[in-house]
Image 1 (cartoon, rainbow, N blue to C red):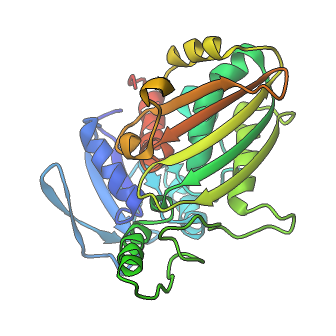
Image 2: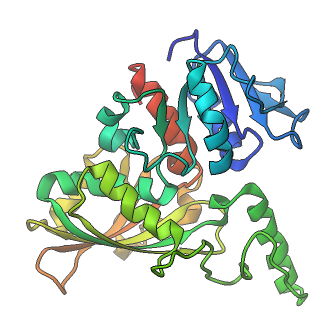
Length: 336
């Protein structure tokens, strides 16, 4: 990344915004300046970056003056309102919301999977849904080797995927439950402590919006509308890292051993698969890591060409902030 890039983070005070700042610092991401943007409620807050205080500014249509790279993670409505302004002022925008993901002219990019699509951008690149990202990282090597006919995925998503305040609410709910006090959900539609809950609006067809994101985004990223995708997404009382049970039916046979070897040689993936020694991906171990972890790799005995995978990744890092930063790095030829 050119040291002349002038970076802005939209939604800097949110969970993804904070993670963006942390990863930019960890990776010594070179740039000339950093502007932190948020709502008027957060304007004036002081955040620290590289031991230096930076004041959060209120997001306005004038905020992109003097900026040429924007990481946006403040919600779809904010993206729809302000991203066209940023693009009009010459910025490259990498958007972490769902606002433009399915727009035909907007690349939807996971660097390990379809970085070529990013080159076709017109000032905007969309970051996929966090659950989609980790799934396609795990499945792309299999897709390239033997093809994929059908995917059945069930997710177990952490509360940090909702917001930083949702994490705090889970703490409060858990404390209340242990103390025998009543729980009144605020950020969640149901009690989240000691529960598994559906946490997204439902469509007329009965699928949740989150489930349809996984269906549509997977087909767009892999550029294959023939893949059948069935998704069930749930929220679990875990702070960080999403877990997924993935069943995949392939075009040609791929043994579990061959899949294990293939994935272990693929970028961005760590295979952790020794059930006899109780070694497999767990959210508490994967939180804070950048890779997509895959384990419980085994053949599905109910169909001829079937595999089961257990896939875990940190939803704030690879599922959001890191993926966006990798896109920016790779566009300028920095190795990831």
